[in-house]
Image (cartoon, rainbow, N blue to C red):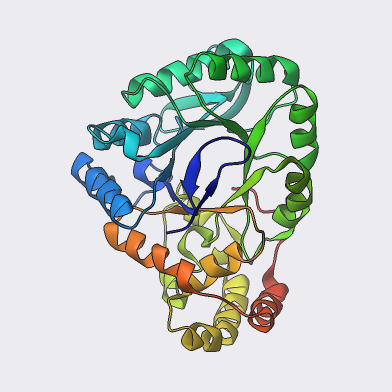
Length: 332
C-alpha cells in the first residue's frame, strides 16, 4: 500500500480509501443490505491490505452505514482514518430541500448549528469521540461560508475533527473557503474516464493549496468493472438505473470502448476495475482513490491497481476510446 498526507494535515492516509455508500443499502443500493458481520469482515480485509482510510456519510442509508461502521470499528478505531460528512440531514430543522427517499426528507444545511449537530450525530452513531475528517457533503451558497468555516475550525480546536474538506463543489468554492480563513485539506469530487472534465478543472485549483483531490465514481457504479455488468437491470430507485450507461445507444458505445480497452487490460494481466483505477491514479499526483467496496474480495482486487503502471501511450489510447461517450456533466 502507498500512503500520503491528507492535504496539509498531519493525517497519513492510504492511497485507496474505502467508500461505504453501498454499505448503507436502502432503495439506492437495492441488491443487498449489509450485516454487522459483513462490515467487520470488510474492515478486516482493509487492514490486511493496508487500507486505513474509510469514507462514509450520515445519509448513506440514513445512518445505517455509520451505524454498521461503528460496530465494525469496536476495538480498532485507531487503526483507521475515519471520514464522514456534514450538511445533509433529515432532522427537519431547516436548510434547503435536497431529496425525499425511503420515508425521509433530507435538507442541505451549512449553518453552524447544523454542522455541529451533524458531527455530534455522527460521533454518536459511530461510537467515537473524534472524527479524522469531515466533508461538507454539498456546498451551499444560501448561507455564509465564513460561518461554516468558523464552525469547522472550532470543531478542530475542540478535537472533535482533525481535518475537513468539500464535496459536490466547484473550484471557486475552494477559493472562497480558503479566502474565509479555511484550511481545506481535500475536495471529494466525481471523476472517471467517462466524465473527466470537472476533475481536471479542479486539479488546477487544488495544486496551489496542497489540497488532496479525492475521486469517487471511477468505476461508474460498476459499469466499468466488465462488459457483463451492462446486462444487469436495477429498480427505478437504484442509483445504477439513473446514469447514462443504462441507455441502449450508450451501451453500444461502451461495448465498443471495452473492445478497445481489452488489449491494454490483457497487457497488464489485470481486471477492468484495476485498469480504470490505475488510470485515475495516473491523472494527478495528489490523488486519493475512493472506491465503493462491500466484500473482502473487492478489497483484494482494488489493492492490485497500485502495481499497474500505464504508459503515456496506453493512457492516451484509453481515453481516445472513451471520447465518443464521455459526458461533460454527470449528476448522481
